Amino acid sequence: MTDDNIVIVGGGSTGCTLALLLARQGISSIVLERREEPLVHPAAHVINARSLEIWHQASPSLAEEICALATPTEKLGSIRWCCGLGEAPLGEIDVAADPQLQERLRTYSPFLIFHIGQHLLMPVFWAALEREPLVDFRRGTIVERVCETADRMVVDIRPRLGRVERLVAPYVIAADGANSVVRERASIGMQGRILTHIGSVFFHAPRLFGADMPRPLLAWIYEPRFCGALVSHAADHYVLMTPYLHRDQAVARDSDAFWNQMLPEVLGMSHGFTVRSTGTWTMTSQIASRFRRGQLILAGDAAHRFPPAGGFGLNSGVQDAQNLAWKITAIINGHADDALLDTYDPERRPVVERFAQQSVKNFFRLDEVTAPLGITNRAICKATEVVARPPLCWLPGRLLGLVCDRATQLQTRRTKVLLAGGARGRRLRAQISAAIPGQLEHFVFQGLEFGYIYRGPLIAPGSDDTPLEQSDIVTYRPTTTPGARLPHASVLHEGRPVPVHDILCPDGLTVLTSSASQWSAALRTQRHSAVLPIVVTCLAAADPRDQGELLALFEVGHRGAVLVRPDGHVAWRTTKPAPEGSSDLNRFLEERWLPYWQQTRRQQV
Ligand SMILES: Cc1cc2nc3c(=O)[nH]c(=O)nc-3n(C[C@H](O)[C@H](O)[C@H](O)COP(=O)(O)OP(=O)(O)OC[C@H]3O[C@@H](n4cnc5c(N)ncnc54)[C@H](O)[C@@H]3O)c2cc1C
Image (tube, rainbow, N blue to C red):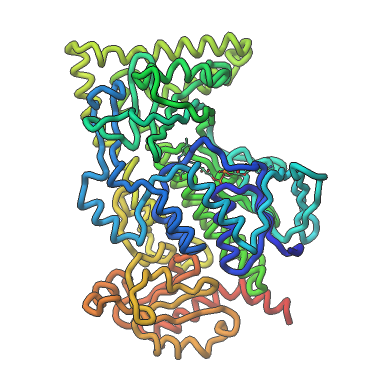
């Protein structure tokens, strides 16, 4: 490998996705990962269909391997609120129980939203990196310093066995997670707030739920000794989480002892479970002030982190990687100018800001369910802030930990009323149960999953009512509005039906039209055709009877066209036929795209 390798710091889901997408385009990279083995303790579990589409783009066999790990939503779809795991639920949302929703989901993508624990996902990624000849995957390697010279990045690394080494690279991608050292050393600040801290335990319990009480995907538990959430994972594994205010509380200071005492009480069993690991993490909603400084680019949690309420974290890092991969490829191959990477921040920032806004909204909207009990996320966040500020932060840690433990116990005991069975308890149960259907957006969010759109210099100005703004969160409205992800459809390609995203040009632009010969002829002689790779592809429905429906879905009429980028996002579209429509396209490409390509050509002359 030469100094032309892209250096990716962090072998998490973001770094792995980027390395594999680059390899697919023939670009080599070095992935530096401080851990020797993937983390056992799970974090993400909601894996969007959009992420699977992107992994399929990186490697169809990888996407298949990941799908094989999944617990389909129809088997694990219920979100439960309860006063104990053995108790009848206070209420439930069952996303699997809506056949119309399930039917709709199958039309949006070749993939479905899946539940796959990150602890199962990461070994698959790491094995894929090990197999990939264009990826030099260095486990057990800590990145200590990244700095910029006139035209290169210098990276100092410390392998577990060996001396400090220096790498030189054209670009460094900081995908080193929420506590990114690379970001910190580059003095790129995070804007936003800390919401709270969470302690969690990962355990195996094969008999936790019986036939009379099916396993929920997620259960919020409100009982006098414990308030928190249970997440179900594959093979009878679970994560139980609870918030805390200060690092000297028992759950954080001595987490093994805390969970050994708490777990039997919450599970209602003194044996029949095995603790695998315990951990803590901090819930924040923060976005880096910039995603690029020179040749250093931030991606994934290093660039943005949100509450997991909605499952946008891992999924948005995968989207960052996709947005970067084709741009880096075009630059490294000498086709595009470095300025192409300046479009990364303006395209991704509004999307991740929207995800941050929605996950915070989901997190606080949970208060509608629990406010009648006097227990709210707002109060927990407020208390977290107060404890971190003077005068409380001046108290000795141990004392403050005890105070916070006591305050948490008092808060938790408010749930007693639910189990007491009196008139007030019945009234509260009814109030809680009535508020649960209002939480739907938290769990069904295809409007955001597929409807996020890009704006910026590479995208034709579209109508003002973008899909994100017009859609409700729950419902996705397929559209070819510029910036949107091209809707999924099955099309005829080389005599067989394939998903339309599979026929997009991986390193250039694709014009999809049902009048391919007219559009090809009109585009062939243009100035940009010598510089920009553009492929004109015939848009034909897999079943000829569906052709009208396909053209209506793509909103291009019988002779118009839609221009799609390698990442599957629409750059431009028209209902006008060639040559009138193609003149508009030529103008758009000359004004918006050629500046990023022209300069390279000038440099090469
Ligand atoms: C409880 C919980 C539930 C969640 N649920 C969901 C969900 O359902 N859906 C979802 O989309 N997201 C979810 N998330 C968020 C998701 O886990 C993260 O967004 C995701 O892991 C970010 O991936 P990443 O690759 O950007 O960062 P990370 O996964 O943090 O990976 C960064 C990597 O960089 C390595 N590294 C760090 N520093 C260095 C260094 N100096 N040198 C070398 N290597 C380094 C680390 O070891 C790590 O492997 C959840 C998070 C939590 C905590």
